[in-house]
Amino acid sequence: MKLRKVTAASAAVLALTLSATACGGGDKDSGSGGDKVKVGIKYDQPGIGLKKPDGSFSGFDVDVATYVAKELGYEPKQIEFVETKSADRENALARGDVKFIVASYSINDKRKAKVDFAGPYLLAHQDLLVKSDSKIAKGADLNGKNLCSVTGSTSAQNIKDKIAPSANLRQNPGYSECLAALQSGSVDAVTTDDSILAGYAAQDKFKGKFKLVGEQLSNENYGIGVKKGDKATVDKINAALKKMVDDGSWQKAVDKNFGPAGYKNEPAPKIGVIVK
Ligand code: GLU
Image (cartoon, rainbow, N blue to C red; front, side, top):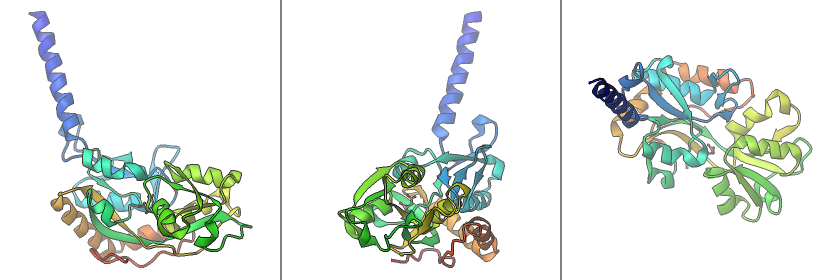
């Protein structure tokens, strides 16, 4: 009798575990003590997506994600942020690990074959971060030089395809590793979006050491990634983004997150309009 009871209890626990797992990044997950939504962000990009030592999060993407989540019916305390590195983003959405991704995620055709995008919500440009006394002044100067970028990023792909095909490109999972390499002198430049590089250059520990070259090497239209085919969520997120711009919250988030780094961003993009 006693044994049967235990078995039934274990079965119930197992069922709960299974249903919680099945929910994944998905909708209302009432199995784990309240409704939660899982949102993918970056953890190591100051000004964009940063996990601070106290466990809290900051950055423009975090503020956009928080606003969007609210419009989808989730209060800030119901958001569970999950790290989605550049190379992991498409898979995280396909697996259902997260409901949406706000992680300096450029919209392009290759990615659109695997995921859907809402937005764009920011237009950035690929640039170079170099030591303050560096002579590197344009993309082509990188040929033959040691360069660092991130696996699965458009930044790395652009270097290989057009900007400097004979640069010695090192690829890391995150940009923070590239910053360490630039500081130690093992690479001559780090390349990614100006929005990200500005945040690094402004950090206390790097102040005065690095500069942005100021080349606009590409147009990076940041979108919010969702699972392929989830048109309902794309539509809801687009409505939220439009509202965020219209009610002034977008500009507030820009001032708060890009102001300290002195990053001069482009005006708010129009939903559905990609700058090529
Ligand atoms: N926006 C570019 C991309 O989506 C570079 C930044 C990043 O790696 O997140 O790949």
